[in-house]
Length: 418
Image 1 (cartoon, rainbow, N blue to C red):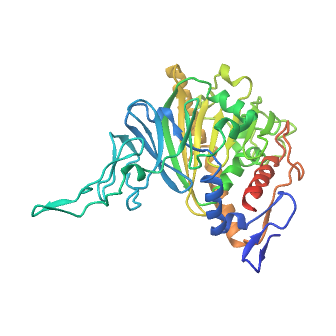
Image 2: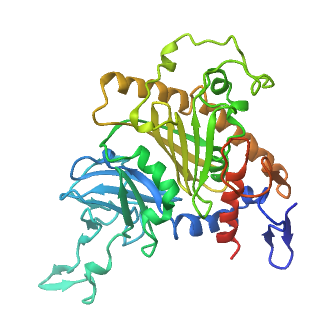
Image 3: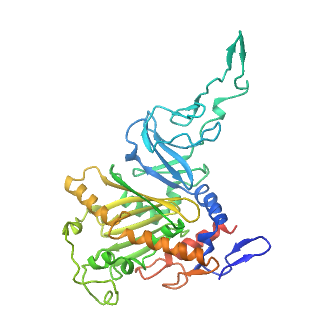
């Protein structure tokens, strides 16, 4: 059970370990604001997009880090920059287009103009106006455009993926991931040029951490997702591993597809239907790719902002974009690789339909997150339980454990309780 400190009106996680998670971590707006500052705006690399989304000079994409609007843009020399979508003059979010191509950015309010790197290069009436032979108004003599650029983020690019941070003193992206998770990142993004296939977007009425939890949770897929267990893509008896970085913030769930069909591990699953078949069997037209090196599914959570998905031939990023403590936008970017055959591209798109917002699988996740949030709001001083596999934090060679969730909250507590 959690409690409230009567002297400070702050919530206190008063239990050892992280196997019991107070509901107020999902319902308190002050906690949420603190998370934004400590987990999104400081000491963390956050996902912003794929290089393939801005292939040409002048191409840009508007996105978010936490709840701050940012722009990923490719300069004329091919360099990629990320700047905050916040005019240095009066703080307006000047860019309204979701994506496009431009030679510069201009704030519509007072027409301040910035180059693609974010440097201020044009200020109307900077030197005043001439009236009756006299110059009137204008900026002070000590006004220097170089002092009023857009907020520039530090950028990391690896394998065609772009991350950025407001914190310029942050460790390298490679150190941030750590060698274990980096190896799985490089497995998916191994130097081949990425090709953009499309987007899905949904708004989920739940706390943003619940999606991180959901993809760190191998307990539910074979129980909630009838499709998974029926057709063998993700089952409790599949060969599997749960991996983490040294800080327990990032994780990978690795699974190798079984043969499907009833066995001792699935006979007690009420949603399992041995006779279930697909009207369109092409959804199971899986082609083994050399880069898999065994696993047919690897789900990576890069804390705090993104999920990297390989589910058989479907590959995508899933960007978590918080909207207050009880809502987040979830943006799926589906991609392929340069050199994919036309048949492989069709296969990737077809399988992507299994995992998008209305897919056979992922539609379930959005719904249970919504219902969980409703339960938390109903009883904010209660707690959830994450004790499958014990109360400790360790990597495993099976999926019957909530160790990755316990690990994430161990990291969360270290940053949030200081």
